[in-house]
Length: 409
Image 1 (tube, helix red, strand yellow):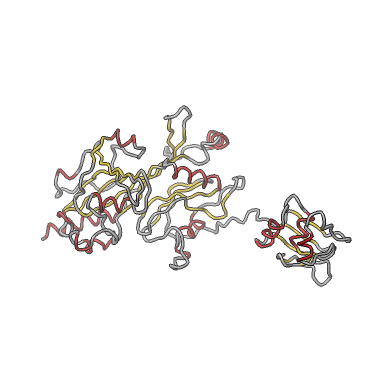
Image 2 (cartoon, helix red, strand yellow):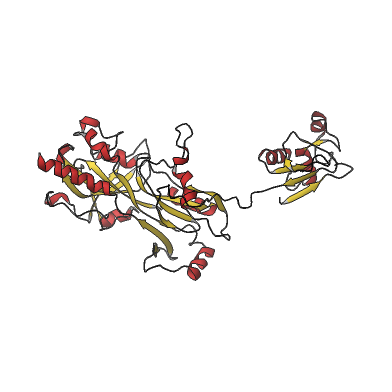
């Protein structure tokens, strides 16, 4: 309770705050009025209009205590409640109310990076990000699991969200890194970064066939598109000795897909990592590819690989073509083989004046490793956070199984 009022014994002067039509319509007197009217008269700065006071009552922010020996308890006030002299009215607000229960190990959601402002978690395949009451996901949604796997921010952290909030989505079948906001300023900052395409995302996928080559670009041209193009390759097992020697492309060569989806610009930069033989795949090959989306359209990577490169992602039952693309049905056994393995973004708090001061004075690297990177592109250095995970074992397992089956046939 942050404010408390008492109706005077002589009642309230309604004429200065309430128009005559409302007084007549609601049958109001100075000693018998509705709760919203009393709030407008007692605290006109907080409740300048009846609509404002009615909303406060409807949202559970107002309590009433009657001037009666039989009714000494505070009860929730509603817009239709009547107020009389010497009745007490209180305004209540949620001061903390943060929902961070004790950690629950039953949720398999590894935390890759976390501070008081945001976190990066590794979403498992098969878990939806936001619950849908019509689909019955409930507590099995990632959003519902976050309070159980993340740490409550320190008490002096400003504008903490009651529950951690995912900033973007990954498809249910896609695994990998997902960014979560823990404060309102971080949520706004991170949302703006996604809208302005400042967040650099990297995916790995296993595709059915040999991808059709698009516009070939250099490493420098790929970086100019503001994607995280590097000469390094994702952490995967080494090239199989049975695979063709030509199946690994040069690390300095990238391909560009600039193909609109639903009338919107959609850009993906990609390269081949390695390939393996498969009796079930079209062209007799499965190919592991590195994908760098510049835009984030609906099913962009899945549709670009299936429609533009003519090699759908393995396990994609929406776009894999079934029996039309080799025996795509036989390749669905491990689910969708698409993983978000790396993200790089600006820190939502440590690049503000207050955050930079806190970073300089209190933050140190641990064990010689740090997720922080300084970007000196502009005059003012920007602090970036980069998180990366290893590609799930099921990718290499699928390639090993298919190559072994091919060798025995």
